[in-house]
Image (cartoon, rainbow, N blue to C red; front, side):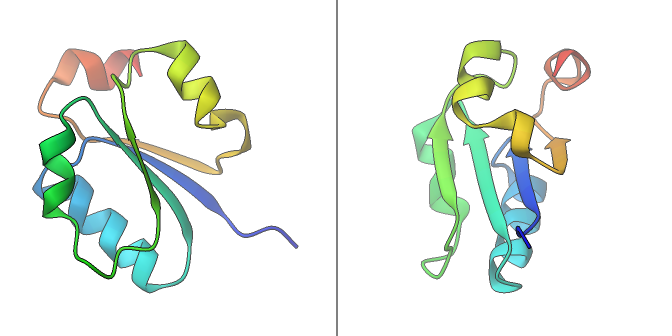
Length: 85
């Protein structure tokens, strides 16, 4: 049985917190942010994947295998981007 795969758009306080908790629970998680420095909010123990991209970039979401994700969470600081995603 495949593990749940979660994609999180936005590595701010909320996104990094969710990603960290999922990683600690041994879940497959990818976090996407357009700013590489945002990933420093993740703990050293983070076992998921990161991607530098805009969550409104459909090609990048396809590269992240969004079609295999059981959950997609958009938590950037841009409400319009969250709604579009």
